[in-house]
Amino acid sequence: MSPSLLFFHLDPGGSATSSLVISGSDPGGSATSSLVVFNPDPGRSATSSLVVFNPDPGGSATLSLVVFNPDPGAPVPVKPNPGFPCIWYQSLNLLVLQHVCHTGQVCMMSSAVTLGLKPGHGSVDGNIAAVGKEQFRSFHAPESYMFPHIDVNASVFETNIRVVGGLLSAHLLAGRAGMQLEPGWPCSGPLLRMAEDAARKLLPAFQTPTGMPHGTVNLLNGVSPTETPVTCTAGVGTFILEFATLSRLTGDPAFENAARQALRALWKTRSDIGLVGNHIDIVSKKWVAQDAGIGAGVDSYFEYLVKGAIMLQDEELLSMFQAYDRAIQNYTRFDDWYLWVQMHKGTVTMPVFQSLEAFWPGLQSLLGNLDSAVRTFQNYYSVWRQFGGLPEFYSIPQGYTVDKREGYPLRPELIESAMYLFRATDDHTYLQLGLDALESIERITKTPCGYASVSPPVCQSVWRPQDSAAVCMWTQQI
Image 1 (cartoon, rainbow, N blue to C red):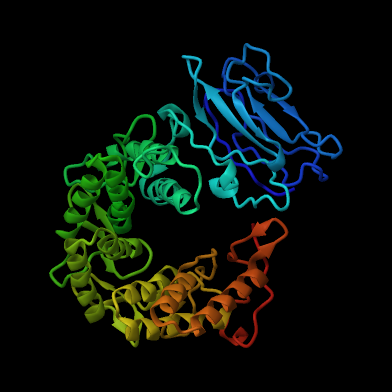
Image 2 (cartoon, rainbow, N blue to C red):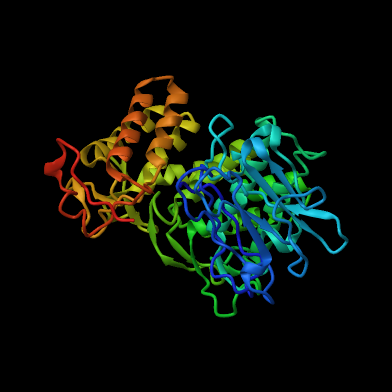
């Protein structure tokens, strides 16, 4: 059985203990249970609100599909009869669930209910695009459903880049894939509405004296009065791509305005030598962590300035990055490595390479700085070759990993840079480097149930320079 379906809880007050639904990829396979039930009505038990059945009577699965009952007080058919709010694609073994709103009309349909596509009918990759394009249907998602009002704290940064960004990407890629689209696309569509709903939950975080956002927001109550004003630089400056896209598609300028205000406020806090630190107090505008570099806590700020400038053809964003880049090259660069320095003095604080910095050669290639990008990439790739992966921290002067920072959490930045360099140079060497990295990931991190981060302390004995001639036998932790 392999995971092919993700669903989420409709009512946090219900009695369901889980909101993850997993379907076996082959209903005729050996799965004995292929779903985890959820409760759409807190007043009833979870089992009263759904019916399960086996779409393949000849198979051994006892539970392979779930029918959501929009009215727990009404009987549920054991199969989708005409008029029942779901769509059943027998050839794809796909059930799409719908919800009936108070008017009795169908007003929403699950966006990610993919139940075991049969061979030859597409593939399950965990994304909405798993449904074949002939079977793609648009749907309407009311605000309370796809991003419910629940009392939970969420990272503003992570929710933006993963939830909002993922939904916007899927919305736009649906058009590229030739799927049936809602009238008015790309300025209309279910995934766009979901992205807008998610982003609106984040906007209260930007209601600060400076316009720089808090790091965490409560999806029900907004920003807590006790929320810390300290956040990382990337947590302030990593919104322009998603928020500008959302504003351009919806016509609501609030999102782009919030992202731009945060960028401009952060820009004004740079030091006299043109650098920014790692963590800032968004109310007082005082730098709490004054290490300047291109790695963790800062990285995507620079990335979004460049990619935002390209996407929006925006001179302001480009000029911001170019000013930062001059300071970075002047104070942090050493033999085509990039160190961490004190943001006001330029003195070295950490002579380390962080795995998150591996995006930098690709970013430089987007600006046409190919010579520098190639040399830095060679440095970073030499670390990959030394260990079969990028440790979180690598000591540049000592040539080995930093104690307790040896882990490799499957970061893709080096492969991203290889992709950009290949596109910029048409040098197929970068394709081979990407293949080498892929084979290394397969060899070192693959487990029977997926891919695992390699984490200390088990890898401390293998993250050593003497192992550079061969890939070590690493213990995998899940």
